[in-house]
Image 1: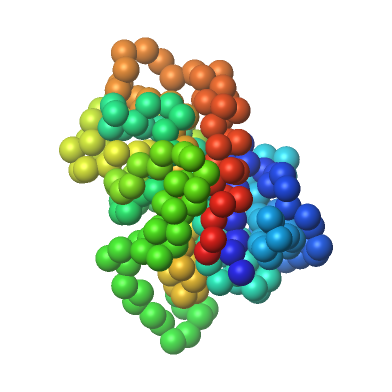
Image 2: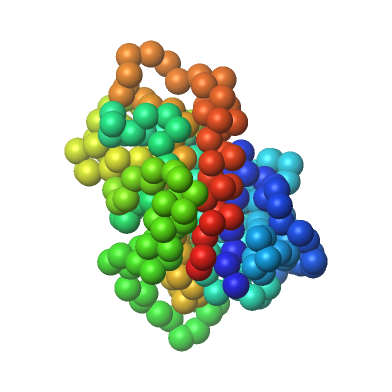
Length: 242
Ligand code: HPA
């Protein structure tokens, strides 16, 4: 069963006919929100609001371990993370939809593994290709079916937040090869891998990253881009045959 983790701007999945609501408790604390199980275009699907519903948790306070645990318990066999991001590559203007194929983790101090001594035996997961190739392909096909252009591939850089980055930090990330910057892609992707669940990301660019254009980034522009773009994200998800 496909699970969708909705990010900023996607706290509700319109069109999901809810048949069951799974509570938040896990052995690792509370998930951000109830997991909704329902039918989306006739197909069973799970939905979780990453920041809670209503949006209350900043990226560094999200209990990623509980979220992924709860989704697995509810029957998730594939997970799509939806993320609002800043565009580092100047070609990725606001409104661009992108399916990254790599990531770099710049976060610190997050609970980033299930293997911290409590879960045995310890597994060193392979994470060479953090996103699942099949699910990425399905997502790109969903984009075509929805009539949306999805940029295929690129490195997602995950920062700690909640502040946005400095222009120098973004310049460094660009030198590292990052095309996108967000705050919630990690440890989500790694935890999914630890649980053995295929995971992919659908990113919506909501602003040019710091210093990419010569002006400040405003919350108003981010909100406007989210409002414009999130219906297109939902359309792609409704076409996803995973
Ligand atoms: N930086 C980090 N995370 C973000 C941004 C950004 O510019 N925009 C949306 N999420």
